[in-house]
Length: 262
Image 1 (tube, rainbow, N blue to C red):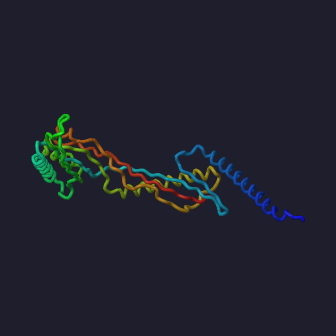
Image 2 (spheres, helix red, strand yellow):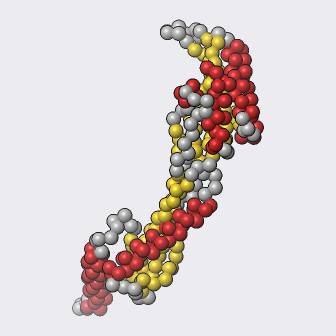
């Protein structure tokens, strides 16, 4: 019996040849794209750049970054009192009295009651050496206070620390920008300009005209992080007002833009 296998293997052979041609075309296109990209090596290496093409034309994807600075207008103070005594009740009474003096000084200095918040309370035994029997007790009360007027913040901190006396503790401060809308608008404008400049540079290097924007997306976090400083307890004894330097904070915006080319 004669079996004709030509009709079975012919489609397989055609498929193998077609796949080989497709792979060869892809490798040739990749080599040409790599040569064009290498020619633009004088540009910024930090820019994210993606080039794609299709029958309807190519696309360039770039990232743009804009950064502006602003002056913080708010200070958040973390402070409290810490006392010790031979009994819990005595230590707690001393801490309560010191905390009331601190709160009173802040209110007298113009801080609204709504901006003063109790943020912590701890009571713990203290030991001496290897003795397992407590020799006393320590009480700590913490306050978080928002100071909206930096011109008065130094004297407010000074008054509160003085009112707490030797029981005063200061954990630190954070300086914040409460309204970033104007700064963000400026940063976004800068980010768009940055993205367009990068896309135009790549398009020129590729010898292609830069087309219109296909899409744009926001990649950034819009809320600046507070900058923390060291504790201010040492400063209260040196001057009647704790010196406050707000410095600067950066607000950044990053976008991804897809342009048409060709």
